[in-house]
Image (cartoon, rainbow, N blue to C red; front, side, top):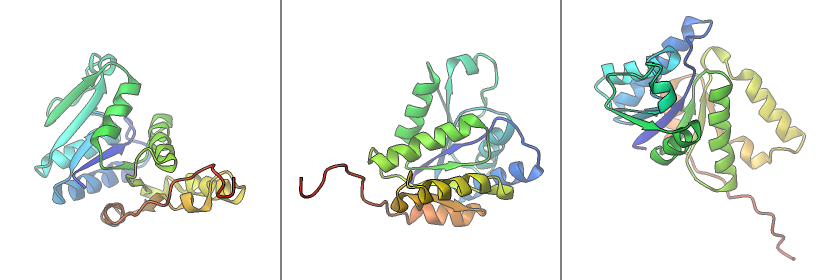
Amino acid sequence: MKKLAVFCGSSNGASDAYIEGAKKLGKEIAKRNIALVYGGANVGVMGAVANSVLEEGGYVIGVMPSFLEKREISHKNLSELIVVDSMHERKAKMADLADGFVALPGGPGTLEEFFEVFTWAQLGLHRKPCGLLNINHYYDPLITLFNHMADEKFLHEQYRSMALVNEEPKELLDQLSTYEPPSVKTYIKENA
């Protein structure tokens, strides 16, 4: 894995654990010589993970829509800042650049970004790993929802395991690096 996209919040969150977890992930990314691809902001969990990678001498690529860049929330010390026209272009560019994806704690935008790449993986549009860094048990309700989806037959059992989950950055990155995707879902019947 050469580039990892990280989706996360532009807020600090209610617990210091979120910022600390982002910093731990950033250090581990830099230690492994993986470039960080993220939303380009200098605030919240986003800023914490980027600063941590940069402080360890790592490479950071920010991808930000121009309307946010104009609001002066872009990080000014990145290795590279790519300015795009829209949120849609931001997601597409991040997905194109990355070899894998991790969601840190964040709000609806973080979940939307994660679910898009997770859905693309199920459809076979990419074979890249998707992980959740479950800092402070933030994603426990989502894990419960994934299990409920599978139990209710809205998520195929083989895809439940596609969302790699860990509370420790080092262990999650190990999981991402050894990920083997399941076969792609098909609607064609063998005897049709």
